[in-house]
Image 1 (cartoon, protein in one colour):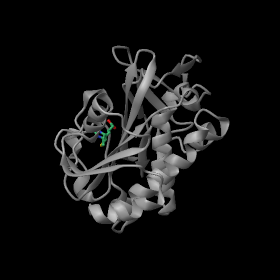
Image 2 (tube, rainbow, N blue to C red):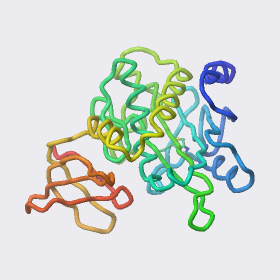
Image 3 (tube, rainbow, N blue to C red):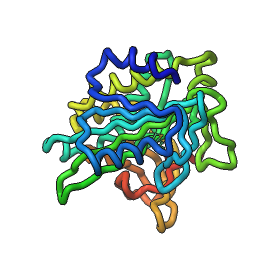
Length: 261
Ligand code: BTN
């Protein structure tokens, strides 16, 4: 990633501060550190060309090799009304990535709650972390990793879910700086709508495996098979279990969602 190109293209957006690191440990860790030791403005961006200690959900490792991917964290300072909808920030990030990929002519799907798939392979993961001052969020870090070039795709034996990349689905090279700006523009545009029916509809429209048999396994609990129905207004995943019961699974609970076909 070229820092001067990145700074030039980001001028079209209301991003107050940009930190760019050719090599970082984890951009989420840098963002959390800033929130704990300084007072970063809303929409402060920390981006890295590569990460040596990238983190995924459920304490998994997230590898970012140089020149191959997007790895960035956006610091948000949620307002009181937004605080009521913090749980929708991760799906908003997934939606923003999906909308940016649609602009390239691709047909992404969102694997609930926020992974983005192309051709049923995961190309993007989102890790949202919040620093609290008592019951109030001091700030929320939205970390987004996108596999862009084929060299960013981890080997099959190192992932929980099949992984792919944007360039393989598109069949041509992608300018990472432009993709980053497009994701941020969609994120900023749709942020005021989180929790509304318009937002739920946009998310639900792109939901992967709708009407298909899936398996969900909340941590420490037995796996359940059923048909994926959609999301409810709280953002919970609706699964019609084989027993006929409608299960509502909250994003905090799910360890694993996978298609059975
Ligand atoms: C997942 O699917 O498990 C989430 C992966 C999130 C990776 C991104 S890359 C930028 C940011 N920094 C990190 O250490 N993690 C997130």
